[in-house]
Each structure stands twice: as structure tokens, then as C-alpha cells.
Length: 302
Length: 315
Image 1 (tube, rainbow over the protein chains, first blue to last red):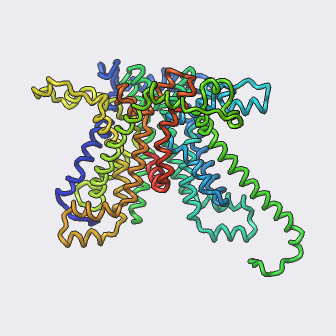
Image 2 (image 1 turned 30 degrees about the horizontal axis):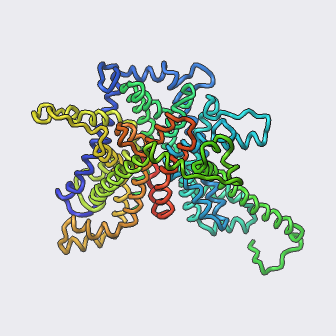
Image 3 (image 1 turned 90 degrees about the horizontal axis):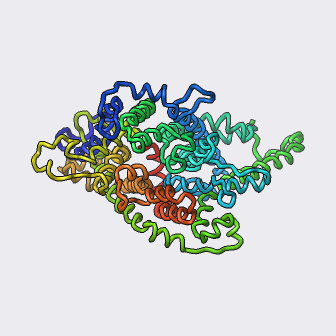
């Protein structure tokens, strides 16, 4: 590559950005790794613990990972649930809306309606869904609909039951992020070769067959990109949980990122919380490698 | 075999055609039902809260928001109360004070660095850019404790206590606007650099080469050629960063522990904690938070969608 001239000039352009990125991202990451090997309360580490924080997280912290009972529970398991349901929910709904909306005249309107939650803060979304899920049927629309259909039903405390809280939170997450999946997948769908789809229709394939046998395989790449984005979001899930349930009831809705925040800022265990942050780092590492590889192959085409 | 519409169809198909038409009609109806159903499902949560924000508190407790569609009785009282008594007026100003510099700084510095990555040569450029890509995805959770330690005691953090004059004064960045501006800039830069570098590099090489032959300096090429051609990319990035900071809860909560400097998101969170079921205040407060992003969205939808789509994996 031979872009531009070599010299000191470039560093004048780079210096302010590199300084701030080092100060707020690069150095803190190494310090967090170092802190995760230490114990003590507050922000000043008092003793070196080696890997003890990690051992405790995986073996003796039932809020983080509890494999002793069936079904297993804890923040790690909740994140697996987020990973599976949130990713599949946003990708499949986004794809469905992208493909269906392409056939109607009110496409811009329906897309705006689905996209709007992306614009709102997670804090406001939390208020909206505390309202939607309220056990009081004059407040919560879900319970209002359910009790209207089934008059004998007791209103359900969606955010108050350990068995339902994660599903309810994931539902709010899907409400937010489907708009993004829809936008990316709709752009991909519109760039597909129309002639292939029309040829299939002429050959007598039903819309259903065309979708599963032709459209879906042709869109596997953009679907993968969207899925990776959603996996990252699911791994980092924190603010919705913090504002809607504070990890409750009885710690049933904790996620990994929530555990980090709670241990550091509520329980004053900076070392222990840092170990949780490092686990999060390790979990996103494969995605980082994937993105770097994707970038390199894109550059090779340039 | 291709059958064009003009050809007479074989008689065998005639009996199948009416049912095929009915099927196709049913299919179209099903598409409309599915889309309208999804649209209503997506609209109802925010619509319900919006209507609630205009209802008197007694009505909210007595009947569902949907009943007020038939018997409208609305008030602006909730908004007035939350803006004055709950301090959301102050928080609105704080949100702006936090967001504007936290948007301008990373866009400016990101443009400078992005230009260097695209069109200047320096040692380690490709490695550094791969680090930028990695930092795009890094969870901010992994930085909060050290950053807060730095903010609480910058002199100690940088081991500068030996400087006589520095050890006497109490410098703290925690709870200061300056601190959160710098943090948002640091956190926002990887995406800003990534987006603008990719845009700059897509500009035609001849522009830069001929300007250089004419003797233009790097900065002149950046300011007079690269920037003016990049207005759409800069707009998308500015909107994305503005929304990201405006909607941010966690960084404000952690780095700005000062009640008088709370942005709207933190005020809402505090309101939930202290008044769990005061729906009239929560609803009005939530819509005050949402008003600015919604206005930006409907005014600049095109740039907006582009920015958010490109930056969805950040932080």
C-alpha cells in the first residue's frame, strides 16, 4: 500500500485520539485484569489472591453459576438464555418483517414503527415495560388482555416471578433491537437478484418454498452479521436489567454485566467485580477475532 | 418451460386457477394481518405510556389508559410537576451540557485520526487500526473501575504526588462535566475513527494526489477536500454519538455521582427507585427523555438509520 507520504505529520493527527483511547480503554483494560487478581473492599486492592476470585465465581457463587440444581441457574445461565432467545427472536422477527414489508405499500410506515424503539434510551424502555408488565390489570396491558380473554386468570407478575422474569426482560430487549435486524436484513433482501426469485415463482415454487430454498440461503451472510451484533448485545446486557428489576426477584434476572456492576458499585468488591469483567472480555474475544478477520477479507477486496 | 401470459393455457390448469387465485388472495390477507398485528404490538407499549403521561393521577389508578380513548380527560400537570418539583428541567439542561461536547469532541478527533489512518503513512498503521476494531467491541464494564480510580484521584493515579504544587490541590474529575466529556470522547473514538476512516478511504485517490502535487499541506487537504466531501458520514456519526450519549445511563451513573449534574436518564432511574408506582411522574419523565431522540429521528431519519446501523455493536 502506498497512501500518502511517510513522516511525523501523521502523528499530529493521531495524537489526541490515541491519548484518550489509551487513557480510557487500553490502560483500564490491563488494570482491570490486574485488579481481578486481587481482593479487599473498596477501590484499593489490599491482597493478592491469584485466581481465587475466578474459582469462587465458578464454584461458590450461586448467583453467578449454579450447576448443583436442575435446572441450572445464575447469571451465566441467564446470559445463555439471552444469547439464544434474544438473538433468534430479533433475527427471525427482523427477517420476517423485512420480507413481508417489501410486498406492501405502507412499508416505510411499518418500518418506522418497528425502528422507533432503537431510538429510545434503555431507561425509558424500562419504564415502558414496567408499565406493560404491571400485575395491576388497570395499568399493565398484557394482564389486561389476558384477563379479558380468560376472566378466571390471576394477573401475572411478569417481573416478580423467578420463572418468568428473564423471558419478560428478553421480550423488552427484542422490542428494542428487532428494528436494527429488520433494517439491515431489509437492505440485504432488496439487493438480492430479483430474477432468481422471479424464476422460482415462474417455475411454480410457492412463496414458502422460495423463501426457505432460495431467499434464506442467499441471505445467510447478512443474517450472520446481524446475529453476531445481537450476540454482542446479549453478552453485554446490563441497563435494562438494572432499571427494570435490579437483578431480582431473588437475583433471578442477573446477567454477567449486571453482576460486574453490582459487585463493584453495590457490594464494593472491585476485585471480584473486575474478575466478572474479565470473563466478559474473554467471552467477546472470539467475536473480536471474527470481526478482525471479516475486516481483513473486506480490505483484500478493496 | 416458460409460459408467457399471451399463450392459451392448457385446459387442465383452468380448474386449478380459481383456487390458486383464492390462495394468493388469502396469502395477501395473511401478510397484512401479520404486519398490522406486529405494528400494533410494537406501538402499544409506548403509546400506552404516552397516553398515561397526559392523564390525571387519579384516573391512572382508577382505569386503564385505553378507556381514556373513549372518555378523553387529559392534563399537562404531570409534565409541569416532573419538570419543576422533580428537577427534570435541570436534568434536561444537564443532558444537553453533557451531550453536546461529548459529541463534538469525538467527531473532531475521530475525523483527524480517521484521515491519518486513510491517507497518511506511519509506522504501525495497520496494527493500530486492528486495535481500533478490537476496541469497538470491548465491553465498557472492563474499564469502569480504573477510570473511576483515575477520576477520584488523578494525581495519585498518574503517580504525580512528588510534584510539590500538585500534591497540595485537590483535583477530582468525578462528578465534573469535564470528566464525563473526556470519558465519552475516549469511549466514542474507536467507532468514530472506524467509520470515518472507511469513508475517507472510499474517496478517489486522485483528489489527494493532485492536491499534494500542488503543494497543499496535510491539514489543508484534510480541511478543504476530505471534510467537505464527508458531510453525510459526519452527519451520521454526529447523530449516532449524540443519541448514544443522550441515552447513556451507565456512564453518567458511575462517573457523575453528583445529584445536581444528573442527566435525564439518571433522574428517571432515581424516580423508579423512590416512587415505584408513581406512574404519572414516570410516564411524563420518560417522554421528556424520549422527546429529543424522537425529534432527531423524525427530522433526520435517513442519516439516523445509517449511523445507528453502522454503530450497533459499540461499547
